Image (cartoon, rainbow, N blue to C red; front, top):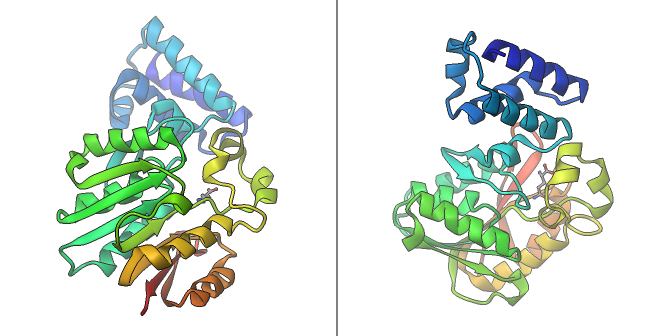
Length: 281
Ligand code: GLN
């Protein structure tokens, strides 16, 4: 079978299984099998696949048909301006989270030093993206998942950032080290009862631990705000990713803890996605 037909057949199978971006997913998976870039496929449509590669490709298509996300199949995902190593059991970086990076870089545009803490560090995509852009920033990432800590370390190594970041396996409640200029987090914020309505790929394959924010989705955010009020330096910033319907509730929680609300930023779909606040006193 040649590349053209492999993409065509794969797309047909994915479509039948209601996979949204069926052709794109096939191209990404086939490029991965051939260890080439996608443009190679387009330039070599007539090229025949050998038996081994065809089998590997068919197997990936089968897994994708069942809903397994592409990033878990290719074990990588582009985020901001880097390609992160991804593993099953860890939340896949979302384009919407790039809004937090953009906002933070703007906020710290003229700062050449900052000590930052990423709560629920996952793959490390947030803290490492910031450290890559700001050569004199230092940071700590914490997560309750040991898988997340080892993956974050792996990504830090990939970008040669090991000397400026450390990762610690801990719950935010039990973490009391240091004083920070910035605390940033994409915490689990999905209402427990609504997890079942998430897309099948997310619901069946991504870790509940990274999604489930308790009864109204704000339980983990509440814990982070509480902790941030002691771990932030005076005038330190708190940058939080939030659910599209959580703005009012979170503003209330922040004000109660005497945070000043700087800005609320929308994601690419125009939903409220990020709150920037400042610890004042
Ligand atoms: N926005 C995520 C989703 O796609 C939720 C991530 C989170 O809870 N932090 O489901």
